[in-house]
Image 1 (cartoon, rainbow, N blue to C red):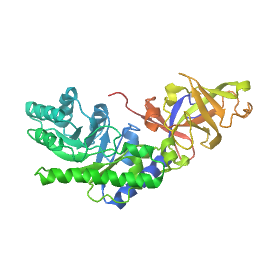
Image 2 (image 1 turned 30 degrees about the horizontal axis):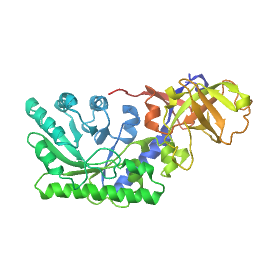
Image 3 (image 1 turned 120 degrees about the vertical axis):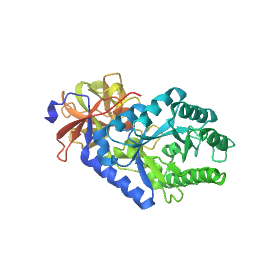
Image 4 (image 1 turned 180 degrees about the horizontal axis):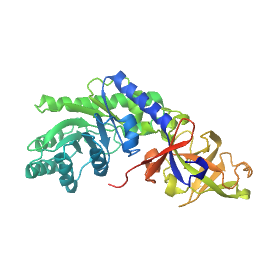
Length: 374
């Protein structure tokens, strides 16, 4: 492949950066003394996962379609880490019947009963974690909730209790690395308290699963935790850079686009990457540096700190100077290729069905497919 012949917009994945990011998280898990269960939801690619999620290890997914794809590729230990609904349980049972150790997630008695009923009817015991809310960010029950025991009791009639799990999504709103480390301690503390309650009541609850990329990288101690889940670390993104857990240069994912025109009097550079390519995510808007819809790099990956993807239409984007100053039409000539670094890697990657993989010399070396849908 010739770089300049790549039709834009297209999704680029820097393999060397992916490998470095993977090695960093692997080392963190080893230092903290826990198993690493990588979340494949960001890249959703079996080829990419080979770098950060060995087939003989554990993985996390966010859709049953991912679970099916990775099961077909030989992965056998899969955690579906989104609250499961009753109409997905028969599909989940089929995955288990195919030889996969699939774990589900629940936080209601009704969910536990549904899993137990399907387990009985299919003669396939389904396993589940109970989701614990550690930060008021989204789903789960408090560690000291009166619902904890009834959920466990309903599940274990015919299903299997694996333990407790959480996601400290509140870490994305932290304003310092120290605050993220404190959030990691809270995440650990609340989940361990929950599992201790279950064990004291006589339930077999072997697993304590925690994780978010920020807390995984900043945790001081994970005593009592058995596994660490994280996903966006594989590619990183501008939100992670804004939190300070990575550098802009660590971001392995970008959207290649081309200059299609100018509005000189407005200071606009028009490119062929709108929200259909980069998404509408404005995840950095509450951070110290608002990256709008994405930061701008030259085609070779050099960060152009003075420029930002300021606005997006469906198929067109508008790049401006951050200070609102004039643009140099000659530097950004018609047809010039640029890269957009994503605010939220998961949202941007979801706009595409494949990656153009870059080698160490910034040259396209392969195309890796990714899966979408549910």
